[in-house]
Image (cartoon, rainbow, N blue to C red; front, side, top):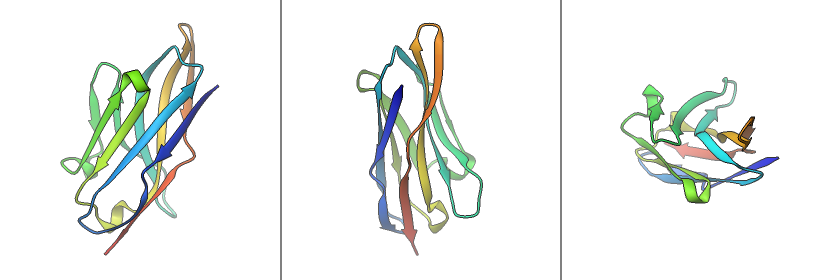
Length: 120
């Protein structure tokens, strides 16, 4: 079993910043991809950003130039620096990890989510 725990959410004014963190623990051989998704009330969950173990990064168009994803492979942790926040960024942010629990067994894990609220 792999557990993900997010932290760093909160209430911020428009234009402000937050740094989200997500630490993975449990039975981990190697983590392939880590990422952040978000879900606003009444909307589907959407991709925010992903980062592969080799460093390749993908961002949603809506956050390009404002958000930065990074990871510390030694700590099995992924970060999301969110700058220039807008009210439309308000959502529950979920951490996701694509984990090899053994060299031959793959598991996708989700964190419980952390609320980000941006006031106008």
